[in-house]
Amino acid sequence: MKKYKCMLCEYVYDPAVGDPDNGVPPGTAFEDLPSDWVCPLCGASKDDFEPAD
Amino acid sequence: MNGVFRAVKVTDYVYWVGAVDWTLRDFHGYSTSRGTTYNAYLILADKIVLVDTVKSPFKQEMLARIASVTNPENITYIISNHSEMDHSGCLPEMIEMVKPEKVFASAMGVKALHEHFHMGGGITAVRDGETLSLGNMTLRFFETKMLHWPDSMVTYLPEQAVLFSQDAFGMHLASSERFDDEISEDILVREAAKYYANIVMPFSPIVTKTLEKIRNLNVPIHMIAADHGPIWRKGIGKILELYAKWAKHHPTKKAVILYDTMWQSTAKMARAIAEGIMAEGAQAKVMALSASHRSDVATEVLDAGALVVGSPTMNNNLFPTVADVLCYLRGLKPGNLIGAAFGSYGWSGEAVEQIESILKEMKVDLVGKGISVRYVPTDEALAQCASLGRLVAEQLKQRCDKPQQE
Image 1 (cartoon, rainbow over the protein chains, first blue to last red):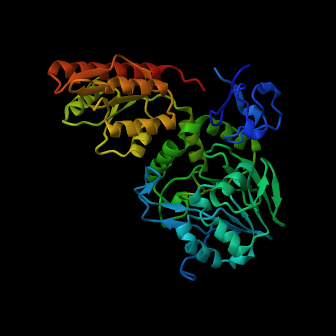
Image 2 (tube, chains in turn green, brown):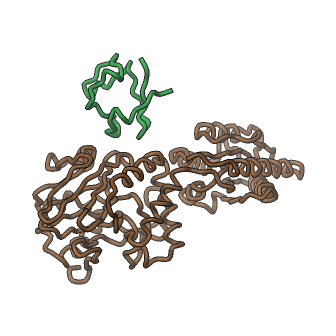
């Protein structure tokens, strides 16, 4: 599963880790995140993320 | 202070009610040799609105200015465009005193304000594009996340064509004048550049997108009322153009050579490199860290094409002042730079490699091998330094003569 990077603040979403503080368990693919999920650091929307290299 | 400190009219319905900080000389690591202002604004619509507050010690000044046009208790709404404490400093006290109907901030702003002031509830989140009726006027909010904080937003008053831009387009400049056309253009451009270099530079891609967003709104903007420095009214085109230019990081024929020295050996190398750069027709800006503040180095790097860094090695490490500035510059993410490292050392000489490693992290394209010299450089060593300078200048000229990609 691919990692995704926030274009506003460079936070990297790692599917292996998820975002447990915000109810997203480890193993959740980026594509499967809810549409209203936001970057936990800066609040950017999913649209502001791109695949991390 | 009542009766002496007065509001300044911006438009028929908008007043500046901020504070001038004549004596500030350091703003979290940014040297503010010209002081600063904390701008807060009052909108006298059917509902009276306060846009941002001031740094906490200046509360009485702001209150006196507000009182010169209206009783502060008449404030119905307070807007927090940015939660940093130079603007939110008196917010809790103002809320307590004025008891506004509502306080507005972006969703990230609500979160940030709670994490600053631990007030419980009481702040309403507004979304990007949301409007707020003031009776005879309206406010429109636009989120500008990471310009320069997650909570940042701007507020537009269409009926007066005023954009309250919080830190964007601002500068640290204390003055008796409140408007851009009243101040020398040289000072405005210099301080706006320093502000961009030190505060906005890492977010340049977001600047480009935000400028496009503003253009696409297709609304008149007669005033840009930022939270520091003068209000833009004649030079709006100018400041927008400068931001667009700075955001692009186009290479220029200017090389910044920054260094520190223990016994003048690294200094001699720096000056020899500069001679090489100049001989090949490019511009050298030599910045000895004993005489230059990190925030002034950042300002020079903003419009540079090359960053050449010199350091002695002390106890197996970079000299601390060089480590300071490199750490600072790394966070500012300058773009499109070429660079090189140099330094004199006694016996172990780790500095040059450490510099190259940081420059690589910063995506600076290294030209040529770094130059390390034992103790005092010979004429041959200085000639090698001058060659490096010439190489840097040649590369700069090549890069600048290439057609720019937009």
